[in-house]
Length: 303
Image 1 (cartoon, helix red, strand yellow):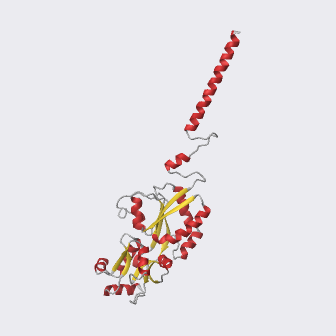
Image 2: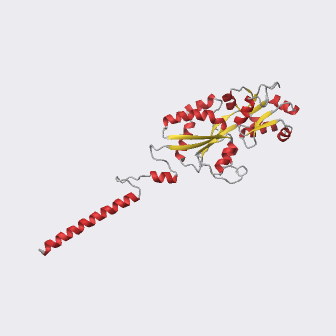
Image 3: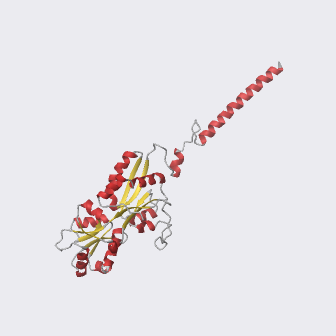
């Protein structure tokens, strides 16, 4: 009889122990973010670390892009939305210099597309220290690529001054008979214009002091000055001339201002680096390049 009582007590004790053990495993599973099937639920972790979101979860991708890309990227975003409805593209269009400053000051940016190499170099740790003077390291390694080439053009307003070429512009500036629209010194199109003035032996500071230059904070402002007749002529990109319905009177040669190359790169502070890279890859596909080429951009030739 005593043996039977001991057997019953032992069986009860083992049942209680197994129940407690099962409850302990359930608490640990919940605490580590695992589901009942043992698979990790990473939604909370992703939102905190900025890693790639779960499949089906909407991602907001912030793209900083030169103002001259406004129309083309807006069109391309519609194509991308059709293929990737889970990605919401948010664009910040402005001069490359302004965008670079915003990124440097901590603005959230997943992908940066500049209208000039200088602004990208100033944030790239692999760039020449004479350009990246602050030693910034904001560009994600191996993501940078030269994506597009543009052209610098001369556009003439409905001015009574006869102008057709850059030679005409230079001669008129020397005579002091025209008002030229150009970008500020921190704007790529302004930097290209400065090189053109130097090519013709013109002193920008003297021209500005003589009231012969009207500045714009980005290429869109210069384009508007020409469209509204606020200046006699302006130096802009052929893509902006196309978008504004302006005729390019002359094209700057590489000897005048070099090539106009647009670099793009994923930023190190990107919350969604994989999605940013995926969109950058998409921009290099044939359908996107067709949209770029329609307004005057061209592919950057390798070599």
